[in-house]
Image (cartoon, rainbow, N blue to C red; front, top):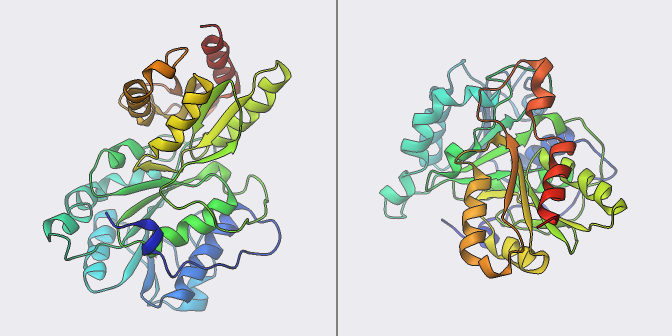
Length: 339
């Protein structure tokens, strides 16, 4: 894969003024990327006149035209396949998958073509495609609309897999993803789209690096996407009991920023990983394995995971019991502190 720090000269350096929602931050990030590079095109179901079901692309077709913001048929395989052809001709396609569970008709194109063409061409051909996927639960939707399929893509060599958790990260990360010469699967936590307005901070953390969003000394809590907010709430709650939790926003699921994770756990001696995807064979499993291999003698307790359950996504009335919530995370920290 290409080096992120040197692959993104087009990323803007001027943040927005005033607090914005994540939805607005993504919209402005896409707009900036399109202004910076005329080869950036957006394509997907209802992304043009409607502005997408979550209105992330609202107004972009009006300002950039139908040739750059393209309403496609309801055919994810065709969306990804067309993007492959565009990328081969020098464009930087940004594909929107309407809901997380709708990505699977395009899965073959992503893992068989998008992820492999660079290697197949011995590095001579780049595949600068960004695939945007709203993911996760918490909005009262059913299966196919509340999935967390990130592990499928993180398991696939040749793909960068990232997730934003704040408006600031959304604004900068989407521009970095589009400017990257590697294919990027960009997971957006849909329940955070309109959760809060926050200011856009100056760019700082590269796309493939984790970030310590709250320092602590007693336990490392690793989260990404929608569970970062849960982890931060837990850290504030734990502080009342004298437990200082260090919260790390993973940001990149592939590649993993192990130096940041290892540095933290070597200081705290304990780690809890939280994500919405089912537990078995997930991102948390991989992190736990690597931490155990590389920092075993620093651990004061086993690495614990707080995740979704190994079942299909439940009906909306049950989703808050299914999702990793504050109580489950606090219980895991209590257990790990007792070792």
